[in-house]
Image 1 (cartoon, rainbow, N blue to C red):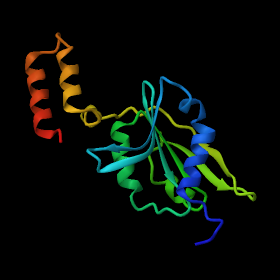
Image 2 (image 1 turned 180 degrees about the horizontal axis):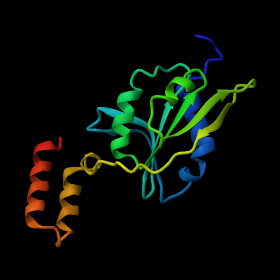
Image 3 (image 1 turned 60 degrees about the vertical axis):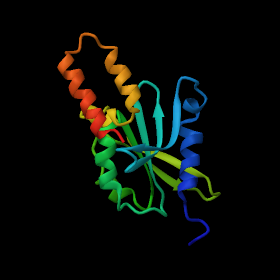
Length: 170
């Protein structure tokens, strides 16, 4: 492995320092590394939670794109926005593998070793979020408490949701 090869940790640091700096310093925002989705079957590299879910998937030059198609399906079910931050080596191929609403930043290692992030495509709002997949992000007790707060919800729907949670929440 070349000493100048861009690694995941380099890209992660650049994203946090350049893209997420304001979010990290905002007390009303959570920035979570390696957020588990779909009961932990997938993990998005960085998630920003502040009224919406914005995921950042990082693919450095030393990564492979093998899991990207399945990650794209999973993230698209729950994330309001997603930004793929991809190394120059994989950029062309990766761009073809993700939905058009995903934002794309290309990470390039400069001559002095710094990581530069260029915007290839701005993200858009996901219009096809799956509420049942989002529900998997919260604990069973939290979901039941949320359901109990809605008196106008038909009791049959509440019962169905509670039954679903009992069976499917791990």
